[in-house]
Image (cartoon, rainbow, N blue to C red; front, top):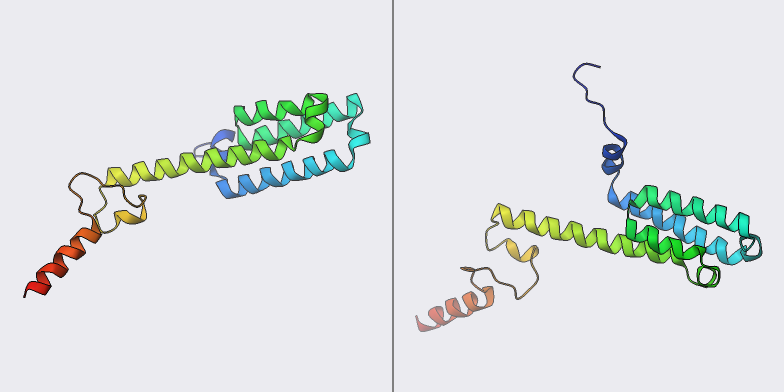
Length: 151
């Protein structure tokens, strides 16, 4: 294998698109929560329920690699709380929200470093926020209209 570098498992996991990982985690968590409600008598038995909960938690952690989601998934082991709250779905939705927030912030930071021209920056920044030296487009349009009107 000359010229090729080995890709570690972590690197290969990161090459999987986020949307695919999010869809897989959300699908698994919804199915696990539905089965938890539908097959409640089966999963209420101590050994079977705990083994399946541990398996689902392990699979979700291998997809998300989120410690916060793993702690929230551990609530499934509490007898009454884990039976009535869709813990897996909630933890996966929290993970998806945090990941998308991180990705948006990273994209905004990358745009700021590239020094995007003022006419293109509106697509990457919320309305009303200005950078030093940048003119508001509404103010610019009103000034040009005032000049045109004087002529």
